[in-house]
Length: 315
Image (tube, rainbow, N blue to C red; front, top):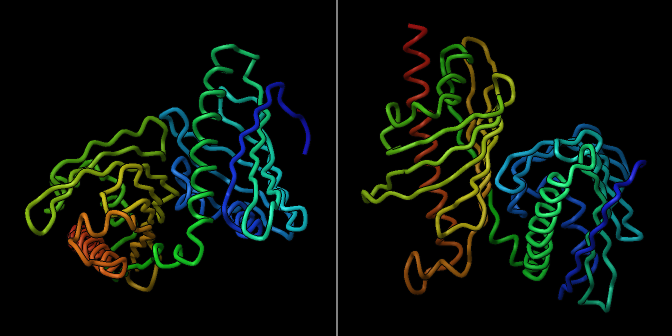
């Protein structure tokens, strides 16, 4: 990896968990949107043992940025080195390194190094990058610490599920329904309000009020990334009280005479909110069941209306 930036930062945190567990969280970049608040979506461009190229969408100082990075992973040294190959202004150069240092069997220190330069060494750009690095680094280190110290409990808190329907219509019409979320208050009974902004084509920022079965409403904010005409991924950046994270995707797969449309959810339960939201004595298992039912109900409602819309256009 070449070309390092002129500015350097170092952030550290002590973690009461085995070094290998901490390294595992850092190394598995596909789960970062679920684990780290700034990350919206991550996917591999290339992957081979010890090396990977990834595309990342993340928030920085309230803006959504996307870039491509190369990462080198060393499981023996417990390090992950990264370098942005394609950056977004005001970033000209950005890279760094995660390093885990064992203290004893149950404790370690995690370091996050950054080096960066701004486009044309612009002072305003340097300040913007510094603020974003400071804010996101603090959030990411705190998240790694919290997740690693949960240990096996993390497996109970994170769960995923999906709903699929077959639609006898053109995929383009189904995509139109899902993509035009700004029209959902007119099209979906459970959406009371939706404000959508798409300043960059394919990146949608939206705020939505959703009606629950009991008549109450809750507000969520999301970032959606639109891929072609067959996939939309999203992350809720403001979630209901019972969650710490919620990511998902809408996918459209062509089949004979129509399409299969799938809504996928991955949720992290907020353990300390379970009894406050659901009542005394309720458990994480209860929260999982509650969230599964609520999200699945909304998804299947959306899919049902998408089917009526698309099949109506075909008919």
